[in-house]
Image 1 (cartoon, rainbow, N blue to C red):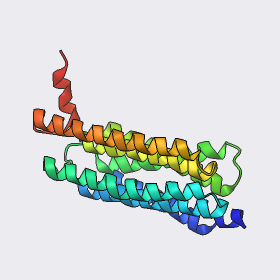
Image 2 (image 1 turned 90 degrees about the vertical axis):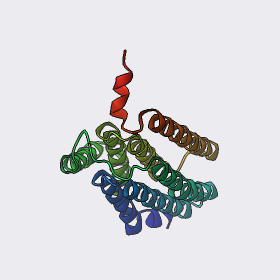
Image 3 (image 1 turned 120 degrees about the vertical axis):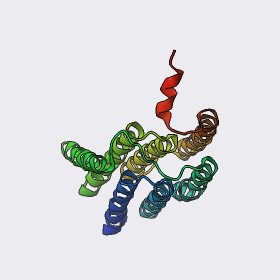
Image 4 (image 1 turned 60 degrees about the vertical axis):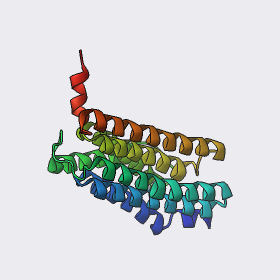
Length: 219
């Protein structure tokens, strides 16, 4: 029964929607929209964790699901929106890679991830789908980091990569030990706070959060 619940169409739908939310971020230059899409992605990830907890009967995964819902879909997006309001930058105009090529590259990364995972012997079709989605999130998050100039978008890229790793861990291994998960959550929260402070300092010093201007510090 647990395997049936875990392998339900609902699980596949949630993972597919997580990928859609990633493309919403990749295809937008509006910072508010990107933060909201990240919040939706994290909410869907919390739902995935809830289904895994119900399927396996592991109560500690319920705790992880609640923490994901609280911190990643509420606290961190609220903090990012606060940063956007304070630095008064609502849209990213100048990109290293424009939106249309970015979406094409993102689609290519999903296809590559799918075929790479197909060559690995996994437990089930759902596990293959979850692992390919996990790899897609990590690779697209990395691409967002290197293709966007605004520090806040690079921060979102890092968070998407972390969500991808979490999706792979929760879907394939039914979660890591609770103590490890809690440690990762607090590490992510502290990292976001530190990056937020750095964004404020960059904005105060250069009157911009465009990280490309940091090359002026060379020499």
